[in-house]
Image (cartoon, helix red, strand yellow):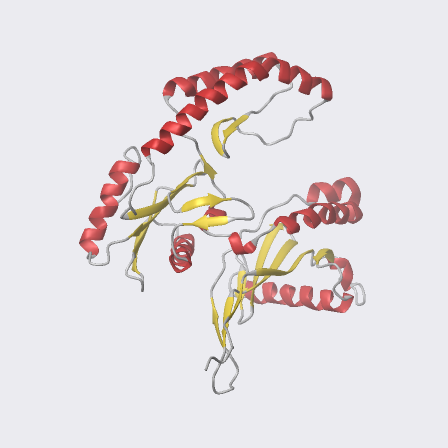
Length: 366
């Protein structure tokens, strides 16, 4: 007879997010002045002060061991806290509930809970300039306006290794089409003095870009002028790019399950390439491998982040997959091999063949 008790799965979720400055509100009774932003906003005042004070104490405690590198994260049974000093004395803290599985226990004891680590990227912001412009009040307004909208778009359950990298997917083009786009962009920038930086994308993949550190305010007249200049030729270019996109899909069309899948990332130009992700958006992440393998990739990335030297890590998963991570010259390559009977030497040879076919112009140290 079935007991009716089922496993309960909990995905990662945001519990708290706050920004504070420990140099504010140092007098007794003014502790709330340290808090510049707190989510969720309906939390009781004393609880906010208590949570911020706890994080402040953790940071100060870890400074006794390494003054220049305080705590980055704290993992507990139920949640994980991430600490990020965006600027001097401006701290951003994110508290995330750990993913877990609650299993019913037949003998009535407390349920067994399995936990997995979740990697999250925290972002940076400029606070000192806003303080100079309008003081603490303006900074608080800016933080509330930005994070109120941003946190609603945060989907932690879809985060994986690509979110850690924060890279850019480049669209491969033949030389002639690429030169057409480059010539087109050059003419636009030459004709319109307001255009300082340009990014040309197709299907969320970058084709051409110039580094941009500031935004350009677009007026109605400028938009009309821009449409008249680029509209007709942009239509022709889109047709050429679409044709190239179709060719690329035909070359890498549906085949049998490949022996290996990979994720590549270049720290120098943020270029990324993945044959693991079938779809990756802010709210949806569809991968072609088991979540346990994605977790192994995340663990290897954590090991790479701890050291500056180039290295290679090979892992045999419980599902008989081989997982390989290579770090060389600010480039990282992660490979998943579906060869359960292979040995270390054969796995190493397969990775070499992959590098030779997919990255023939990139040097990876052996």
